[in-house]
Image (tube, rainbow over all chains, first blue to last red; front, side, top):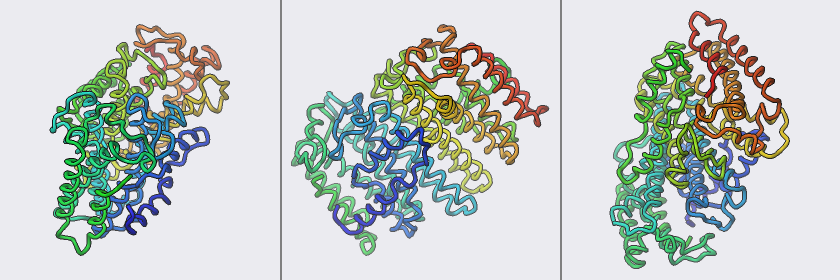
Length: 298
Length: 298
């Protein structure tokens, strides 16, 4: 993503991403190192950028949304660490560097994942303590945390991951494939935008429109990921390609082929842009982002 | 634990422990099964019972504290599932039945742990949504969730686990041993009591005294666990004994021997009871519990 506003928000995140981790003791420093290693691995920061942008868009103060943006990056990062484990996808490379368990060992990688997930909620709840005398601001925060917990949980991301594992090496129906995409990826992207919108004080209609936008870019994002796994450049991607095919993963390009997948991404991107049409004067960032996501090479 | 009040609260927990898990889809039912398997495995329910009892003791309504009590049991249970994994303690048996990964496989066990941890926060945050118009009750809940997130996190339970792993097969100082006990076990026990006290509306002095009680029984509990691992009855315990010794784990009995460990448990139990002396008329449950914990055989 090359648009200026994305790069600005990404920069803000890179500056702050370690800031909301709890201060750890010297005796558990390995834990901190392992968490920081994956947080600093140069990810896109898509989910936190979306949270901050949605907060801005709805009239909130992006700086005050940082604990929540960092929390969602902690959750995304924990999910990658656990996903890369030998018992899961068994990947050696992520974002061009060795995966967490390759550097720190499996036991530490499992705990680093657990630590990031718990730190996400610790950071958000610690922030809430600052608003015990401001009912309106506290309410927005409670709603934001709930969105994030739901999107990350057993009716969201984790549901998608379990369905993904169960679908390996099997003939997969369209219904299951949609379920996996909707949950594994779109759920947390939706949660990011919804949480940001709550923090910014969105009204119901704006929340619904942003939700529609988020679901569509979320699905397009996952299909693009799978397209890149099949046909992308390993060096640009920073990870091995072709692994979905060898594991017979349930993906859109594996099932429908590349041309149909590209068409689908286009359709979803159009749907996303249509959802925010009412705000076109003000939603330049979201329009640009949808196009860039559909056009990415990494 | 055989005292009537303990059994009553444990019964309440057993009735409700699945109730606050998010409703899952048929497609992610394996995830639910794996989480329910470990929640139903017949644990002591010590942490949630302590949370409910502390809430009662401080004048709160135990029924309204159930989402938080269940959440802390979800967190405890996830930590056991991950702890039993081959990359961690590699245990086949827990509470007399096969460990989670032995039944569901490693990938599902990792996700079931992640699911339980996330569900804990989802359940608590969902409950908070019910109190958006009651500032006083909402405040208590925000404080309770923060205690739990801190106790479970990188300055609490997970810090203890990483130090525990790093201390294996090494000569261990007293300082490290205390650090492991304080964090691996006492931190979540403290969090349970502190969260319950917040929910019940405790004043600062009562919170401090209960905190002192919790830390002492928490440390005694872990030493007793290690004593039982060295000298307990496998059938009663429902797991293999002697594993700490074979892994050269940093434990009190491995370092100081059994007699000194038993003395230490007695000393900590006395400290715990002394901490709640001001409330003796009203604290019968906590006094009995401290004695029972020091006297347990499983």
